[in-house]
Image 1: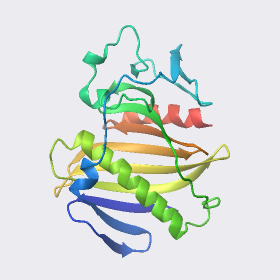
Image 2: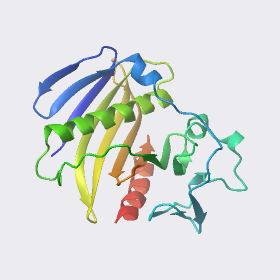
Image 3: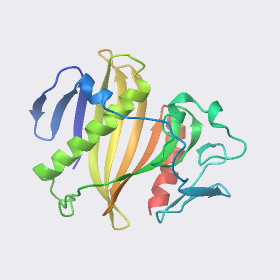
Image 4: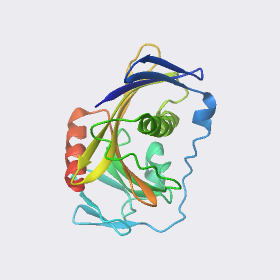
Length: 227
């Protein structure tokens, strides 16, 4: 089952449009509360070897396309001062890896501590009200971060769709987010986010893109890494 969500940056209320569809409006405070602080603190949580990122704290690895730039973990040839600002601002102690073609077409993965996880069963055949609330809370957080990175003080809106999928026996919440100018809805940039909840942590695997060809390559590598 797939739901659609439109988020506009203005008022604060939920306007239910129809079952399975909702329009959510974020406040300025939602965006301002997002903390994206570049930091060199914390140990890198993996290494890149032979165009493959191997995570050292989580049983996961991903192939890196040959044409991609590895922005993090750091390499001898890549200095942080030369990083695109939108990439540089994502390098903190939660980041696992980030690589891609440019600041609009890249893959990133990061991990966050989970203080409380709610078990909603399989979530495949039926979406409960509780799981819908979980989708809503996560989407609000994802969209606020997305807006903080790419709006450049412009008025924007989000078109978002979510679903739940089982991959190799593991449950993933998947979000497809399109950031557009408001009200003309001219496209800015898009994201596909796979969210995996572990016992103590939540892992976010994200493909950010404006180019469909770059998206296809990055998505293929992501899906293969999760199988």
